[in-house]
Image (tube, rainbow, N blue to C red):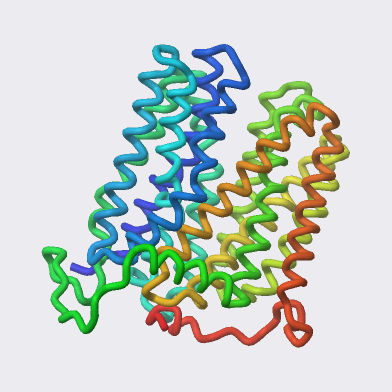
Length: 413
């Protein structure tokens, strides 16, 4: 029976919602158990900062697997178990040990993002890949909208620990969809490879090197990766500032959750439009345009006045959603088939790390000056745009280069 795109989207949505929920849930449970904001932020930093190491390795292993979906399911299960261990050990054993467990679990974080997206060409037909990519990006936006809201709502109704439990439950609900993902064309039903080996398989170290070389040597891929990572430093700063923004504009730190909801809803609406009309997207140019729009939005948010602030979050969401869809489109177009998983998980891990750096810098900067922190975030977006331009040859016309057919992305190189 053919694996349906709806099954993929359901699994990806559940996993990503659980992932988006896990960060706020860990913050809330860390604060509730320890009473320390520093301890709570250490948990969040621990589970995100190690993604840069885990992403390339997970991607390389997925690329070598005959049934990558089964490895993906194992990674999801291990991540859920890590969340459970953190919940059970917090307040019972020394905090550094709990943070170390979070760091180990964070190695698997990219599997919840890029690990899914790398399998999309095996689920969608080549001519349907643009629409499938927009729908896939939509699951990120939906998860970003629902995750923090669920974390706050569950914590309010049932206590902070319940938020972590619901988060890991959502991740576990994605296991069947991950397990059933199609294997490689050379894989039989039992997962064994049937094609004869023409030569010894390269080592995983060789694959890791090849993946990084592919990202660095393919100009559109390198340009989009650099731009998105630096851009996400600014996004991390913004998210860290939202409680203070909510307090300044609306008189309550809890209003920061509302601001994040506005951001995610705008991104969701923008990607819903792209899912209906995927040919509107010119991926390379969209990466640059969306980054510049984020810079303008963050500068507007620095006013901390209610109406301009909400408008700024709407603009930021409308830019962030298409930026993600465009990034996926470029990766699908440029990634060699045998390195696809690694390129997606490496890109995801680098973005997570950029976000973690921004979140870590945003707190001290916001303590010093809230408008100053947001202007620095806007500066990060401008720096990302400068990086884009630096990677664009004079004949590139700001990224409006002819793109290769989408069918090429489905068949590999």
